[in-house]
Structure formats: C-alpha cells, structure tokens
Image 1 (spheres, rainbow, N blue to C red):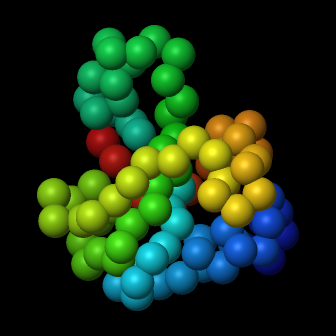
Image 2 (cartoon, rainbow, N blue to C red; image 1 turned 120 degrees about the vertical axis):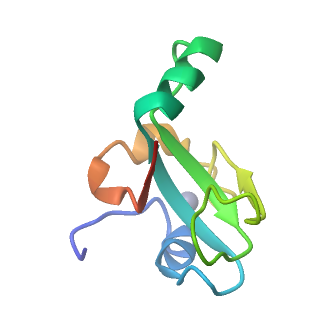
Length: 95
Ligand SMILES: [Zn+2]
C-alpha cells in the first residue's frame, strides 16, 4: 500500500476513503464477459475504470451506486489511464 504513488494528495485521499463514506474515488478493472462487451463498443478502451462514487455498500458497479466515470483527475488534470497503469491500484474487478 505505502509504495503507491498518486497524481496528487487530494485524489489519494478520495482513493483511501472507505466505501460507505460520502464521495470516494475507485479504480476498477474490467474482466471476462464484461470486458468483452466493452471491447465490442470500443476496441481501444482501457481495461481500467476511474470512478467517483457517492458511497456504496456492495459494489462500485451495483445499480444502486451513484457514480461518475472520469478520465482526468478533477484536481490536477492528470490523465488517469496514463498514470494508474498498474494492477496494484485496482480496488475491485468487474466481470
Ligand atoms: Zn490528481
């Protein structure tokens, strides 16, 4: 955990926020049939998703989770897919 690097301290704080608490930032990885469906729509799409949620119980991808997919850090404008390439960052796999 401690050797992870983040684009900025603000996004790191949201990444480390627990699931159920207010806004948080999640990095997910799409696998299996879910991933295959995404590739049909866009063959170049990243296998990771960068998502802001308003807090959740079960899963980032649960229908009841209010979420927004982002491509750039809202604080420092880093392109997330360029910075967070390693699977070490993945908090949930969605398949
Ligand atoms: Zn940032």
